[in-house]
Image (tube, rainbow, N blue to C red; front, top):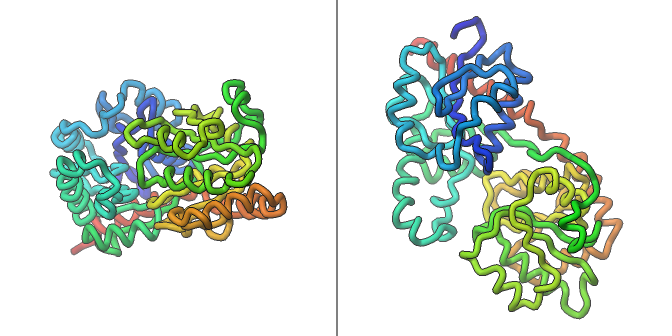
Length: 384
């Protein structure tokens, strides 16, 4: 280490694209917390298209990542380019925010594996991708889990999956929870949504449209809840990049929901904050999550949460959300109606959500991550 107690960490920042998704959000919030609160313990460097550069502020992170494009994180050239840059640089370790670890890395590696959905549930991925990429995904993830100096994952549920499916060693896997990614902004609905949605008059779903996200189950439960005048004028807003592959528009039409389900496509952060803040409740029907951030974002905005009882989600939301089996349409519909009809229930969920979400912060995520760095350094410097 260059300074006593100060670790020289290279972080692969190629997921920080202009349209960053989950890994990019994780990278941004973790890096921001590291430069703002842990410069006395971590000397941070970013691996970006132009090379490896020091980063000591948020401005540095933004400046260094301006030339990153969607898909750069997955380029094969990192396999030889990054190790070559690491050699002779005096760095202590590499942190990659996914399982894409260089095969020949000259420094110890910490990798973050958020989940292994394609391995645990291959039925959730498109058949063409399953045939072409699943064997590669499995082999690379297995190697990362077994050969990294440490693996960081988001939940105990994901840790157990990594141990069971990839042969990861428990003593090398650290559970480091995430935190809300969305700042609480202005309260009023943006004009482009105000014509469709009313404050307190819609359920909100936020996320991709992949089948494992459970959107089809939500649509069927929403239709069931509306039968015989249930839910009154309550609508459903679906925020997240639209995906025509899965036929949700056709499902909405067949269920007779054409006038009350609104597909909003990608929603920028400020508008998304307003959508959370003005929703009657947030619904997260996913069948599998390594962590699941939207329920925490909803709680932070003072929005009641209805959440799937699958995988890591009960671990993440605790008793601050109503848990539901998303595949049981009638019981799911009954919970939607109960939340819509009971102001007392909504108030209780809001209060529990505020209390629960205080347990999560990116400063805590960064602190636990730095602890992992320290353990790796101590292990590599200890005599064998």
